[in-house]
Image 1 (cartoon, rainbow, N blue to C red):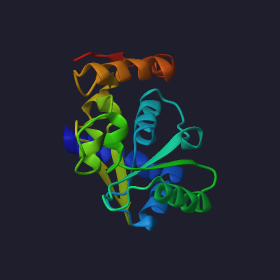
Image 2: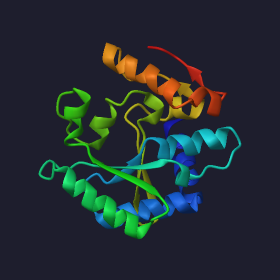
Image 3: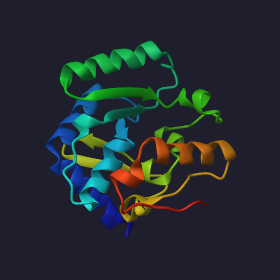
Length: 185
């Protein structure tokens, strides 16, 4: 099942010209662990399963990387500026996962994939990167919840469950994608 979902996800990404170009712009930055995650992948799959056209111009494009020696927000801003020059029609958001544990109240992360383990829901904890014509999928919880349209928290910690519940309501997911189901831990 995992391998099939990887191929399906990669095929959807490659077929979406704008997303594929966005991944190419991130690839050019040559960032350690450089990828795009969260809604960039999640929304595409859920739109596909709801038989809707997906357009990442209407969403944040969350660029992830892991660079323990470059923890300053100014570096992230420089990278965002470079991406805006490459693709000004996208809403770029660049975050070094090596510093995000401070904001999230977690222990330090060891990589982009490790950081995604602490995101609020499993279906969002997916990132993709591009290497030439290859598309690499990183999904620490797998792709099953994403493709089954299941909203499930990644942790039973009170603050993580609260963030999970808040996101479901604030992002209006159950209205936007009515076939979603919520599965608490």
